[in-house]
Image (spheres, rainbow, N blue to C red):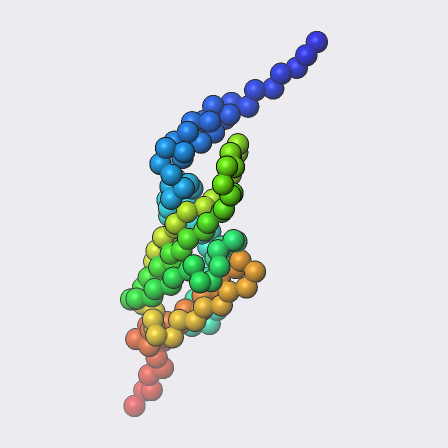
Length: 141
């Protein structure tokens, strides 16, 4: 008796490889990376500031761009995977290509004071509130 296991997604992966081959390397991974959910991000508030932590493994800091304005942060970049000449890819699950993600925050921010740190594939953004968003203590006269 022989057991054969057929992965129902093998046909889809084969189709994806064929489409990627026709479109070229620039398109590899665009279906997911460019969809807005990459890179994954956690955002939390600490005091008056927001902190965004993004996972961007395999993306060098020279391949990242960050823009800040009003109440949004935009992160864009490029993740390249070089398989070399004559290589045939049989399964592609690691994302590659360009990505562009805009994150809206619930408050206005101070774009000039946004700070970024990058270590081991993790990008941390320290995002201060705009002055007009900070609570003000009012003295009673």
